[in-house]
Length: 90
Image (tube, rainbow, N blue to C red; front, side):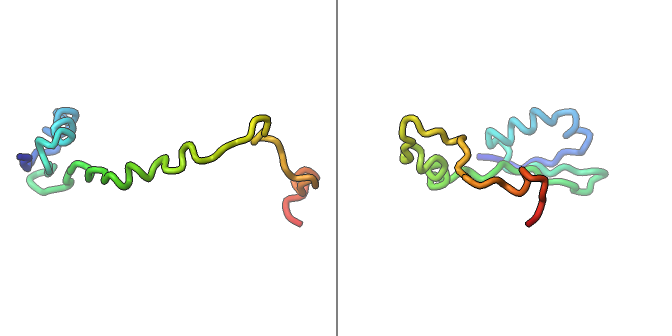
């Protein structure tokens, strides 16, 4: 079971990477950093990603078909752009 820990700012500075590793592994569910006994920061692990969010990324991967020979970088406009003629606005 994860626990809570309170550390001084100087201890946090000296042991920062170790404390972050322990938060990452959920050894600590909360670390309170103090300066002169006054809390100035609270370090908590990020919430776990829910499976729905994980599935959402890349949801359409593989569903779009680009025909062979189609150059997606080829310009599609037939007319010139105002910027090509040195104009910013028309």
